[in-house]
Length: 309
Length: 252
Ligand SMILES: Cc1cc2nc3c(=O)[nH]c(=O)nc-3n(C[C@H](O)[C@H](O)[C@H](O)COP(=O)(O)OP(=O)(O)OC[C@H]3O[C@@H](n4cnc5c(N)ncnc54)[C@H](O)[C@@H]3O)c2cc1C
Image: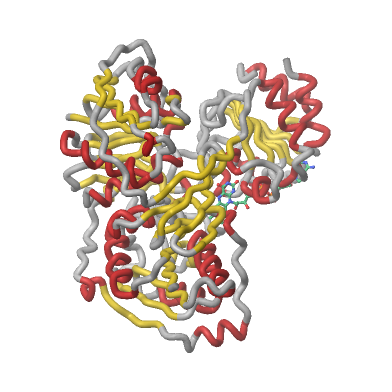
């Protein structure tokens, strides 16, 4: 069976981790063709061609795909849909914007955030912020699926799939890109980091987040935050972990000054080891923590930073 | 300008979800139900547009069981002008899929001709994150998802979106479908007088059949299960002990 996988591309570069994880999920369904759409997607296409398990890469190059706007990219995917039984993507904000639109244009349901492939028409996915898991079987002719990347291992690289440049379908000009506000950072990306250090409302201010950053830097970790920390302006929105933020499953997750609301747990409870540092021993975060430390984070976190490494 | 806001009745976000022992779904009997938090933000935004003189009328619509009347009354109490209930299910445990909801919403849009549809970005029950995008596709309109800022200016809307890398700002042609994220605004509480007033605001009832939309599901739910539980951990007494444990576990 033929599977189309829409690659995650940022500014011409392939998001390798997210795409390779989705490839390992999609490969369970059949032969994977990766679609790279961008203003200049030659680089991303070459990167995608190295992922093991990819049979072919399609490169759709046009200015209108430069910022992954939903309307033109969805039209492009629909134009290719005839040849595929499955249309898939990593469950990134980008794909969640586009794939439901594709599904509706094809008159099929979308299956968002699949965490397991049971068979070619049956998938498991979390509902209610991960408090229940549902197994759904699709009766649609085509299956449109996004895969939650935190639950799949990245496919290896070392392949050399052929790259084919394909015709594009243009844009109806419904939307235009204005600007991106992206903070450059040398830290590991949150969703692919092996270790994540997160701060919550307990951190108290943007300045105080420096102690979270110091620990993260010591551990070469990515940084996360609770919604309360983001809402209060202590941390940028792209750090939010949870039901409506990013879902992470690192080897080690260190939650500092986070109470452990179900909406936060939804984004991190599949981490291998969870550490919680909170001064309230009743905080629900301790129910999921492997190692809990009841302490004031302003003392414990700098001490931990000093004593590690 | 008319603004249409779809609202969903969902389990309250503070309620602990229980999977039925027979695996037949999540137990919603005798559980507190509320307006989906994202939809509440969409209602608030629509009301603010009206207060700013940019919208003339705010219409709220809910699709589902007839108990969704309560959800609509909540939105009316916040300040929406009138409500439409599209009854599409009898059993409170039936979740109408986003594709069917989008088709019904399209029918409502065809009738009401709003220039803006403001949706929540996802419902906290099925977490599908799809209805707004699907509606936009069916209408052939522009879409702006995960909005944390919306500025309508004539025949375009400038929308700031929360994306994985940070923020993206786009401009979309009206009419449009916008799906809202958590940080767009803080919804108001309805005052008691407004709750009383809301009881008298128009609420009309329709059915899915009135719009000739087939709401039968495309996804068959084979099973619903509890997620794996984490085994209980330990409380350490000091930072030194924590460091030792982490080293033992090979985590650092
Ligand atoms: C629809 C919806 C979606 C949501 N999505 C998300 C989401 O994606 N992600 C998310 O995180 N939340 C989300 N939330 C919000 C969630 O419900 C909680 O409100 C939020 O997670 C709380 O953040 P917090 O733990 O930082 O703050 P709080 O709950 O206020 O907890 C702060 C903690 O810090 C501790 N503390 C304070 N000072 C110190 C100190 N000096 N030392 C040590 N500990 C200290 C306190 O004991 C407390 O436990 C969502 C909510 C809704 C309604």
